[in-house]
Amino acid sequence: MTDTTRHDWTIDEVEQLFSLPFADLMFRAQEVHRANHPHNAVQMSTLLSIKTGACPEDCAYCPQSVRYDTGVEREQLVPLEEVRTRAQAAKDAGATRFCMGAAWRSPKKRDVAAVAAMIREVRALGMETCATLGMLTPDQAHELKDAGLDYYNHNVDTSPEFYGEIITTRTYQDRLDTLAAVREAGLNVCCGGIVGMGETTRDRASMLATLANLPQHPESVPINQLVRVPGTPLAGAAAVDPFDFVRTIAVARVVMPKACVRLSAGREAMADELQALCFLAGANSIFYGEKLLTTGNPDVTRDRALLARLGIQPLVPPGLSPPQAPAHEHEEHVHGAHCSHTGSHTSARPVSSCAATRRR
Ligand code: SAM
Ligand code: DTB
Ligand code: SF4
Image 1 (cartoon, rainbow, N blue to C red):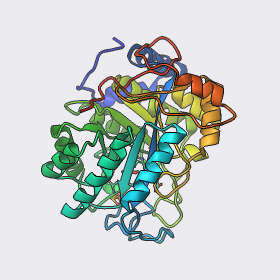
Image 2: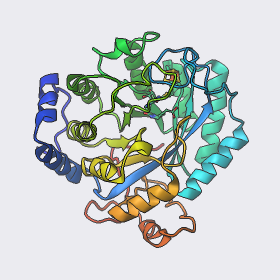
Image 3: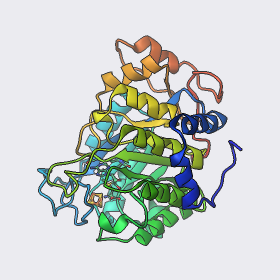
């Protein structure tokens, strides 16, 4: 049963997974994880905000909405040369994917052309590319694919039932339409959501059922813990029980066996032990580098030390050369992880994974 990919999950069934005793759910998640992924490897993506702030949307969690006073300054599109420099630095630090995010409701024609140039630049460095630019039309998705984009990130964020409490300026169906356009263009889909916005366990189950019941599972599923940014409507949201966050990762792993599940925003506030539980629950991807889009992320030194302490290796996607590890106190361990590039699922050697990933 561990490698069966289903698209007919009921919310009740997914909620029952959340209700399992913690150890039983973790055991199930581990079974699924080990049947489908190299189990001591984590994929690393670095984010860059290519267009920051002044977004017209009203997403209640977001520091970049023009409607909230969060201190995030509006910035112009980042120049191409800076994108190249930042991507090279991310690669040198050990990231294999570079994700470019823009605070847009949807990109304009000239925006897509500018991002296409960025994608070409990053790809020329030998990195995977990801973009998150808001809603896309089918033509825009094709244009980005033609530029060499590997992944498009567009989250459902929460359950269809709770969604209206969080965003009013676009509908859940708008999001599903963009996801369909992205899929149809042949891009890998990166789609997940946020935990900690006041949603119930049933909402979390409903969000994961929505993702698992898409015609094709996303290749990448970011699970974000809300970063409570002062000035946003959700600044005072109650903290999530850490075990409930781990449960969300574990259930995502069980219902989407082949997806890369990303332990996304919120890591800076997490203890190493909690992150370790998330990896045990089946998370096999992280954002790497000291900044997300506008908020902080653990610095590279802390992350490299944590992965080394846990015996976790960087995961090198198919078709990419292992990145160069920089001089570092843990160089030996992490560098060792780059020494081979195989498809083994049984050892801690660096491997290709997220089996569904497609390269051009
Ligand atoms: N503007 C585009 C859009 O919304 O599709 C792309 C960028 S947007 C910042 C990407 C995702 O970041 C959101 O869908 C949300 O899941 C996540 N995000 C934004 N602010 C967050 C926060 N404070 N805590 C956790 N996740 C957040
Ligand atoms: C995703 O699911 N999380 C990332 C990425 N996709 C673009 C963004 C997290 C943003 C956290 C708040 C900030 O840094 O502005
Ligand atoms: Fe704008 Fe994206 Fe933030 Fe929503 S999540 S306010 S669309 S940048």
